[in-house]
Image 1: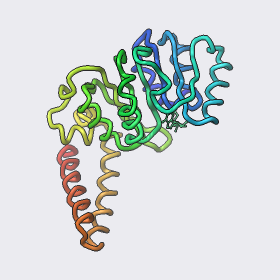
Image 2: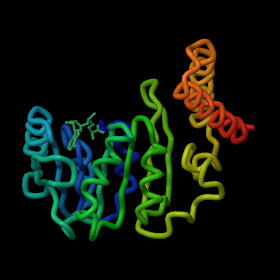
Image 3: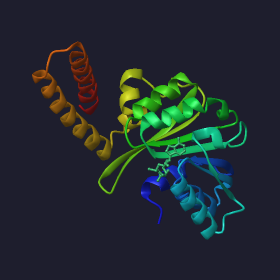
Length: 230
Ligand code: SAM
């Protein structure tokens, strides 16, 4: 069975997409989407040899070698401009996902939807989407095996549309902070507790400019989060 996390990502792939799944590892996601009939063709991109071989084996074992191309390379270098209509990047940090998008900007022509699942640092991706003409159109937060995951869905459009407050929205997610479900509340209570500890450590640490700046930032963000959780 596919993880709930990847199944939720797959639910946002538009029907008849040509999909590139970047950092595909076992290629579970494109195989699932293909077997379910939601894509016309898939590309599984991998930078590392081991996962690349796992992807090839999984594709062959699923009888999908005609449907899914497994390609080795860094980020979006495995696709051509106008080759795919949907890109998924899941299970990595937000900073890495953002750098893959930034480096591969030229390959995004023809892409209609990005589905991004950062393990941490979702705000880094929201910032990038805002700066690059991508409109966030849906978000999900879910818990699986004791871990909390966010999924960001984005289409070409007006990047400011979903935001009332850019600052709070980038940090917490404009859709997630409106919905405020149980997992969201749990995530941010954990985060507040974690920040609280760092703030208190910084209070006892050397008062360098960097430490003060970090502390002020954490206090500022904590206030934003508390206001939303109220
Ligand atoms: N996407 C799968 C998922 O969500 O279950 C696999 C996630 S796995 C933790 C991350 C994968 O991304 C690894 O297999 C790694 O080799 C690959 N990866 C990391 N950086 C990459 C890059 N710049 N380009 C392509 N693949 C990359």
